[in-house]
Image 1 (spheres, helix red, strand yellow):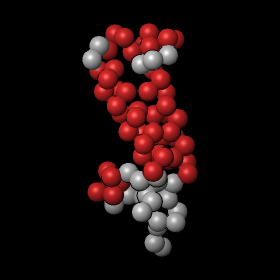
Image 2 (cartoon, helix red, strand yellow):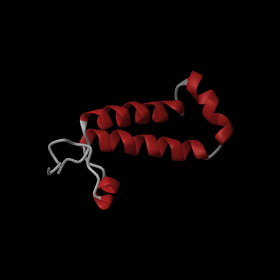
Image 3 (cartoon, one colour):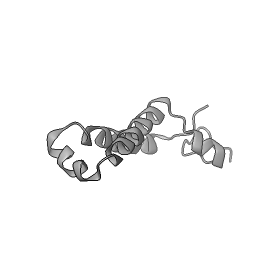
Length: 75
């Protein structure tokens, strides 16, 4: 079942990639260093966003009954 639309998918993939890269890419990692252990939480959150964008399925959307995919809507 698909519940993530195209725009949502692009946003999730882009934001997730930035969050994952923030821990490893030197110019971005300077912003994350002061967060200490929170950088691992941001990296995990980014990885989850990339994963949900890849699968086009969000478990939280499913629990809340939300869909951003036009094909999944029943009008």
